[in-house]
Length: 182
Image (cartoon, rainbow, N blue to C red; front, top):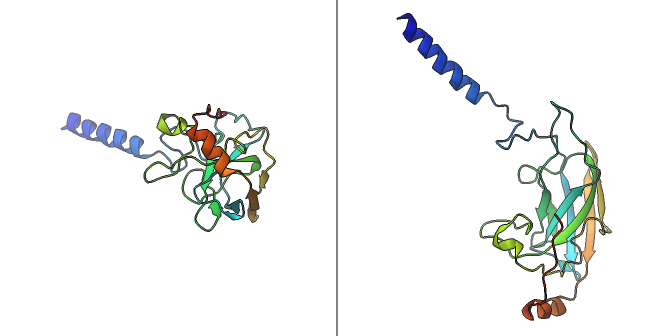
């Protein structure tokens, strides 16, 4: 009977340890940092920029000390039909962690059922940016955002401009694609 009780306790202990991962840590091993809602509007040539992806690039990311939350994954939002964008870090609409960000924009064909960042491999990466790469480099971005805790973090209204006909002609002519910075 004693070995049977020990076996049951061992199984229960393993089950408990497997279930005790906190909600703050994803299967990737990245511990989540607090996020704060971020919203804004993005227009292209005066019209809502539906389908454009806005990406926040953390400037001077911290090097976390052991036991501190990690650097978050890429933060992005897709512009809707009204031109509104709400950013996500871990889940839809959760915003971004506190920090200084460069903001970039790209417009690539969306994956079925979702957003397309274009920089994560696969067929989307080979698709040309419909903005001609004009707004894709965080080092050259004229757009920035400071996210603070407890504040209304608003990107404001961004007005992008692009000669879509000329870009489309270049795409159809097979011009080399703009390189996406990693």
